[in-house]
Length: 172
Image (cartoon, rainbow, N blue to C red):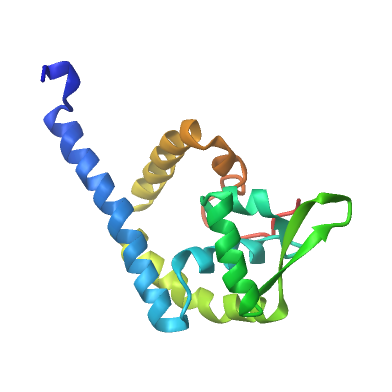
């Protein structure tokens, strides 16, 4: 191989670190949620994102983008959550071709109960290790990498918040 077809040593090390984060951080959070509430990380994220919307409902396609999963993966997640009574699927009253995922009261209670411990775990695994400047750099880097890959995922997120502001419900 020529030099042009190989990563530089710094790129190789950085890539290996990024792959490690992409593999082990979700596994850590998955294990934590499985042990504490019996949900996968993907399942909890779907509930969590639904709880951020003012009406606690969202089109399935937008939820897939927001949660960074494929539509088929989201369908499997939603089926499991629906079976557990944590959300329901409803036809969109304005467009019967589209389906809404709707958080149930049981799903909302689950998020309310789990969220403080989940936030503490995310902080422990990620944000407690970074100064504010590092958090801002991580946000910039993640957005720069994700935008060309899946701009719909970035576009579906709430706008950047001013430092120190509380989470506000997302209006559709």
